[in-house]
Image (cartoon, rainbow, N blue to C red; front, side, top):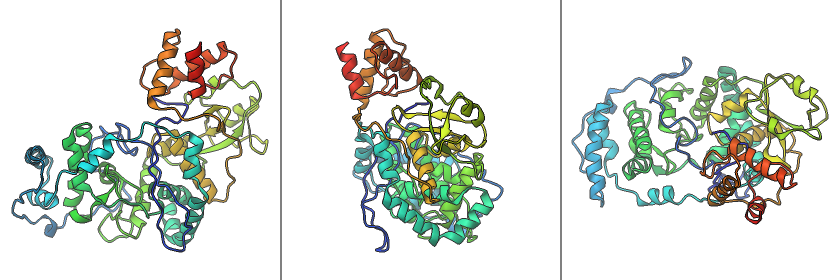
Length: 451
């Protein structure tokens, strides 16, 4: 379900510990909260594709990496996990994983309760979009991003020329995903994925990722002990999940490996460009442009399904922040990520391409705006309604429940603020003489409770 607002964005704080040449301010590695689709890069139920871009150099299997080894007794304090591994061994074999590869990958693997704890205890509190962007496009992230653009200039220029994806966008994703390589994740990936697959809450998804991870090892791209990542299975500089790696990762250095784990970010950055190119990136088209709305603009027209040329929006009085019509970059929609009281954007095709990496509007805006700042562009100029306080999933559900009780059309009581809920909020606000911004704030909940 598409939403007009940021929903469920959880930011894990991580102290940025780059070299002394970096700014020393604390920097966060930002990835909106996990959704059933996975880590935001690709749909969970996507088949594990063995097809990569024609431009990708796919390494051949190396016989030395496929040498059979004796079956290893897995060491674990969880008998249920032991039994699960025995059952999974057969499923992995049916998926083409050779026994020697399986044994080496699972040697010493144990049930990791800390991974389950992290999966179970993701915060229900959500960041408001301005809070998210404060970190996503912080002065530190901009400074360090410009530095990496200079350091990696030759590599990024080659990647841009080859894939047709703007180097600033690739760099922005790198900055958002791992703070330019400083936060790649150091957990053993096989152990984390096996634990989550056994745990069962999203077992089918994580078992699919585990099979994909074993295929990566079997291809010889990385040794089992060097395959590290986040607790939830994202890997390398730009945090690919294993299925996305299989489908889109490239060997841009020409060494026969698609190495996204190396201190050298070349393959990771090229793989990110390949991913965006695969989904139709249009070079030199902006992801979006901040715009001014005319007085009396109907916020119901700010929806993704309504696309028209910038000239048509200009005829309605919509201008860029300099007061000029937006150039004709193609069909565009209007996005109001914080309702009518916050910034407004005219968004284009490339917004949807970044969205393939992560579906949260806030993430896409963060990547796009960071890329703009790396190009020397200005900060977002409109003010945000910072008087609004964050609402929990529970509070959002209560908003939906209250609206439904009052006869407004709410699709589901799920805490996800989609088009139906936004429309219902606006109707309620109009009935109370309030600005119809459709925003699910604590102030709105107070109004609903008191009416």
